[in-house]
Length: 359
View: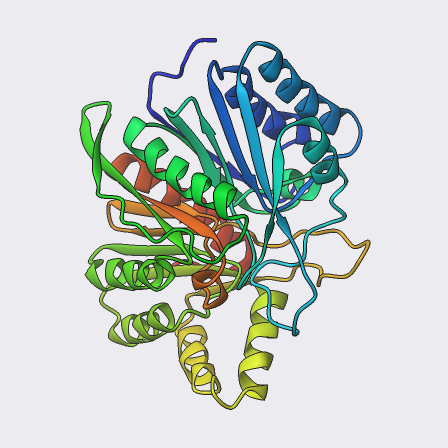
């Protein structure tokens, strides 16, 4: 299979804008190109019918040609009610089949979810982003998929995977630092790095807040919820200062649930006026998605993306307090060209649900 000329491939999903087959093809391309190893970390997988059969068949074929395939997946355990930055997984029929098809381990969500959606191929390429392996994630949600060919980045994701595989729990994973690595993007000299929670959960929120504070040209955000204290506080200040153009797209029902939880919880009630100030600044668009319930369509605004001037941050991490404790990942890409592409997507999502001009 011919490799793309650029070491980074970005794919942006919009509600109703692409087919299940077209998104599945991106995932299958990574699996089909494997020659030595495939490590999969997936929160939710539910692809009934031919799509699921195609995915399982591709993994079987990889094993048949000598590829070592391993998978880890989230296993929910009963616990006290909490606000989920992402709704509970759909019925995990494909996960159950995956566990039978390849060596796989259920990761106990201690202290919170195994929320990754990544694949590491041959220690040389990483597919990550916000996209779960479900029909609705492929067709009815805003999502991001990013594929990066980089030995340095793949080594970081492999280290995180090994911690999950060997420990079989969320707790204790991601506690290492990945230094920025150079990457050639056409004529541009870019840089990439990854961070993982819960080990660097607070560091991820601080990284996002720091990059927001450093921005001088533009800030573009897509996140189902924004509940991380450093991010909320920085955004409230930036909206008041009017020194940089900002657009924010969130999922309406999810964010409203978070606000209700803050109001009911005296310890977090102080976050409510910060969010109200951000909304009052006219920079927020909220998708009126279908609230989660068994059997309903899952059409959330699910993309996780931050653009600050010439860099972008994406992965599985919502800008959320719970994301600091989940098993999550982010990749930071310093590249004007890819930041521009991500900004166009974020602006389109904002405009679709705001119905007003950007600032």
